Amino acid sequence: APWRTLRLFLYFSLGSGAFIGGLITLSGTAAALAGARPDVDLNAEYLNLAIDFGAVAAFALLAKLDLDKQAELEQGVIEKIEKKKEQKKVAKGMREREKLLNTLELEIRISADGTTREASVKEIQ
Image 1: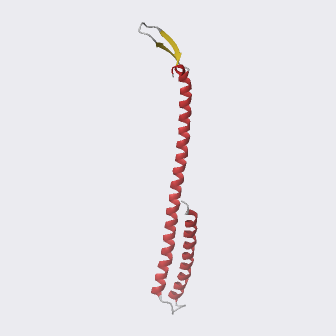
Image 2 (image 1 turned 45 degrees about the vertical axis):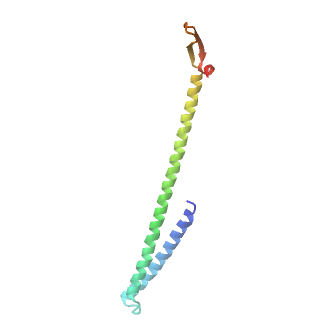
Image 3 (image 1 turned 90 degrees about the horizontal axis):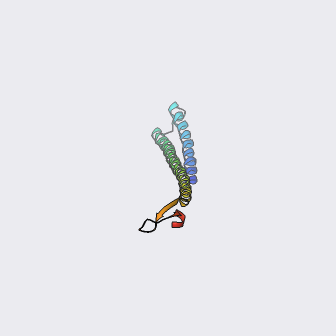
């Protein structure tokens, strides 16, 4: 994929930013629950925590899917390379057999009375 590196960079950078934001929000929520900050609206803090850690989970999922697709594509490339190598081996074997068959001597009947003549496959072709 042409933009995979950029996408992965964005997933990890945006995910880490959301994680840091979630940690900051979590510390503010913990302070509010301990009574150190009575001015904090806990419902808004819970919503912010859900958004931050939901974004972290979403970016992690997207990165995993992208990396899995990359591994699948790389495996396909490896299989194609191996298949090409096998085809080259088969083609080489076929050329060798063709050379061997070209030297094969045949006895050919050339007339109705049974007269025969010997010739190689190469000469007949």
